[in-house]
Image 1 (cartoon, one colour):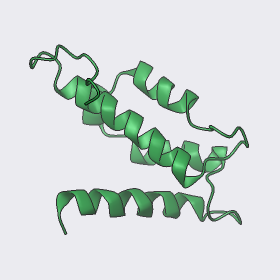
Image 2: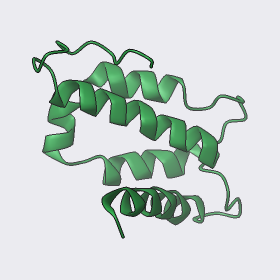
Image 3: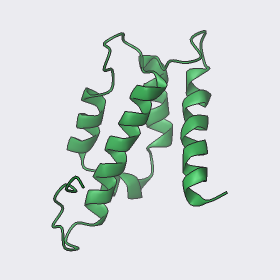
Amino acid sequence: MSCLEKAIVSMVEVFEEYATKDDKNRQLSGTELAELMKKELASPEFHGKVEPAVLQEAMTNLDKNHDGEINFREFSMFLATLARGYYRARNKGKGNKGKPDKPE
């Protein structure tokens, strides 16, 4: 598989691993999300690249339908926010000066 295909499969597998810990297999509860974040977002390199404000933004925007649970759509948007924050931090000072990407 290509790197992108592996990333997509990994994203789905991580969601399913944590979402299947209770009877709601297609939703992450607050407890499941906390466990996921503690275990899956633990590397020093990641925390060194993603600013706490980006993590807070991602958390704030998670539960779009306000049902107290995170579905796969909300989870994928959360991961996209984290990826953008990581990208900005990784490329800070490389021409775009850490500014958000311009829409095409």
